[in-house]
Figure 1: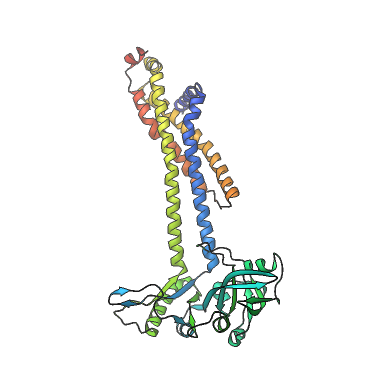
Figure 2: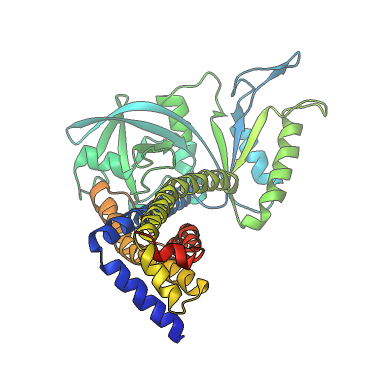
Amino acid sequence: MKLWASTLRLAGRSLRRNPLRSALTSLGVIVGVAAVIAMVSVGQGARARLQEQLASVGSNIVMVFPGATSSSGSRAGWGTAAPLTVADARAVERHVPGLRGVSYFRRGVVQVQGGGQSWSTTLWGVPESFSRVRDWPVRLGAFLLRSQDDAGAKVVVLGATVAEKLFGVGQDPVGAEIRVKDVPFRVIGVLEGKGQTVWGRDQDDAVFIPFTTAERKVLGAKRIGNVDMIRLGLVSSEDEAMVVDELTQLFRQRRRVQPEEDDDFAIRTMSEMSRAAEGSAEDMSNLLLAIASISLVVGGIGIMNVLLVAVSERTREIGIRMAVGARRRHILMQFLCEAVVLSGVGGVVGVVLGIVVSILISRLSDWPTLISPTAIVGACLFSGAVGVFFGYYPARKASRLDPIDALHHE
């Protein structure tokens, strides 16, 4: 321990002889560590926002889409197969276990007027089960009723964005009348805000009316009962595989798909989408980390370069130390300690700078950042390893000097 303490003191004394050079040498490590922490924080924040956005779409969700038709070995475009229907959704309710609800919808872009304002938004024609499947609570008023869907009632539930655009912030529009494509509707509710989806679409920029009303009085339909998608809510995520198998068998049977033919429908789960999105976020985080780590490598090269210069400048000093009894390992330890001190101090300063940069990114760009203790510890350890790795060659070169030649060095 005394030997290490003495070596550290000598290393510190040597570095203090040229404080500006030492500071500039550590600068590469400082920038590298700060970049690693900032990039990891940005990546972790992006992943957290992604999980939040996926959760806003709904948990334990399974979606069924019309697929593509095949003819003579070639496959047509997506959605060219026969459309899904309300009858399909009813069949799912009857035959597939493990569901907390089944919903479906038709949607289109419409112009709405109300409160003296006009706004273009997305219209959703949905049944009363929609909010339950999507786990989308109502903030004001109530959601659509089955009786309103059966009667084709002209009632509407507003998304938070539409309510704000038409009636202003903090206003209660329940009971007010709006016009949807010039058809009068009575507002019966306003949904809680959901925010943006993973794809950047504002979920709250929407209005919801009974499915029957949408297809018969607003959007129109070439054939009554066709839907754009069927969405199912699962009781438990553990039932997902079983539900997907049951759905596949049911839809192949209902759509008369032959055993040798491909499915003309598609089934997607939120867990599948979540895994894909998580994989993309992880790849992006790793890319950012790899780019930031290059700065640490550059900093290590700077340390090696400065120590090589120091060996050349202090050759006579090394010869004197060897002449009075210092062994090769003592010289090796001293220069390695100098490298580790340079990288270690740079690591500590870099941690502080990285945290400050992460906070600034979060506040100035409104981008979430999560400062990871693991990243901080990892960056510090990596900076120390950089010091050892890049400091070893100059230290070994110094320890291999011949004492006689070193004493005669000018």
